[in-house]
Amino acid sequence: MSTKRERSLIYLLVNKKDFVTAKQLADELHSSDKTIYRLISQINSQYDERPLIISERGRGYKLDYQQYLDSNQQNVDLPRLATISPVERRNKIMKQLLLVAPRRVQAETLFEEYFLSVSSQISDEKSIAKILQRYSLKLVKNSGYLSVIGSELNIRDAIQSLINDTGIVDLNQILHDDNFPRKYDVRFVFEQIRYIETNIESSIPYPYNLNLFSHMYILLDRVRNTKMAVDKTNDHALDEYPKVSSLDARLLGVSEQVIKNTEDYISVKLPKIEGYYLYQYLVSSRIDGFVPNTVAEHSKVQVVTNDLISAVELLTNKHFHNSDLVNRLSEHIRPMLNRLDNHININNNLLDQIKIEYSAMFQAVKRAIKQLASKYNLSEVDDNEIGFLTLYFASELEKHKKHIDTLIMCTTGIGTSELLKSKIIANFSNLNIVDVISTASLDEALRRYPQIQLVISTVRPLHAVSVPVVVVSAMLNMEDRKKLNEEVKHLQ
Image 1 (cartoon, rainbow, N blue to C red):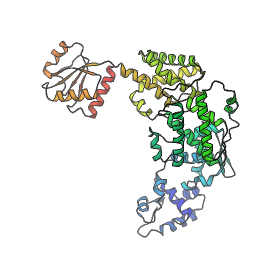
Image 2: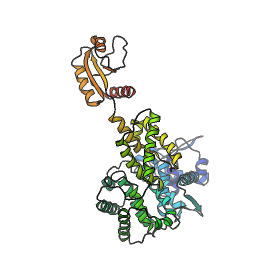
Image 3: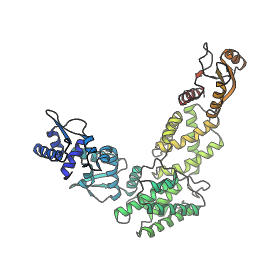
Image 4: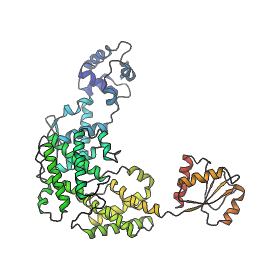
């Protein structure tokens, strides 16, 4: 394609599933019908075998996409632009605006690579503005330029939400992740995290190390893109920082030193408040073996912990209160309350699995947290935090799972049933295999073992029995395991 107008027409047709009239194309490209006819003629003249843009009388025009892909004339950007979703496109544009905020960017520059119609561009701008409102940020359009206005912390929160680190559970993975393209900055941040860990004589575990990494990487991003020291004189915390007397001196000292190291690295003087922001990330992390020496509301942590356990017990009709759970959960809730106060979010890469594996418990914890948030005036607790809290209760369930007394049955009681027994033992630790029997001895076995709660069989019993029977194959395939797992959950 030799001209921008020709490319615009091609990319417009890429996103059309059916024929489009010349008038519709002209309206979207803000040109005349004659211009559309001329552009189509110019494009088709570049293809010898058959036209790239098909025409049908009364229906209009449609792109022969396969012809375009097969042609030696194809533009390498087309497959990417054809498959990129509107959400991905808007997120990319939004991130570009946030990184340079509050500087403005020409709208045409932001959108030109996507070859959108004016109506689609307006739609994207409205969607971006709506998303930014969640972070108390405003999208401003003036004289063909777009900019994002709002506090520095809100801008960074919005940027962090756009970083896809779902698959990262080890910081070293970041070295191969396209979300963090400047590897020299990645290595510098790694060095600072190691410096912090050395000084506090403890390691910062996942997901807190990832959260800390993102905060520092975004700080570098912001300074590099705004070409100036980040100004946060309007942020509320700047006024409070010098008055805070309850900070852990060790964490504050190491935080301020890391900011000095960062200033030397980028040759830019940063506001003193940056040390406090970094401190808040550290004190909001659960660091094994390190308890910050602060005068934080210890009593509030204990009360919230105990109230959460009581609320979950009431909602699930299960008993959870024990000193071990109280201690472990309070160690999580202490930094969590700090995160809520400082609007620090953490990602939970196990969230989808938690929602599937412990769906009922997740919903119970979510309802309990909603009650506590209202009672203690807490900021909104998102699903990532709720997922982590759910794991504490789920681990209690796993520890105290009752064993289900089970019979294994097949036609002869030997051979296939022994194979089945070994597979069940390997996959279901909460099943207590009482006996392996034949079909003919089922009634006798149920009389002999009145405690039996489940029968797993390779054949259907000859008549109905008083306990659940799950029919599976001797190989215990994935479908069998799924079916058996559902019955086990029901029994528990």
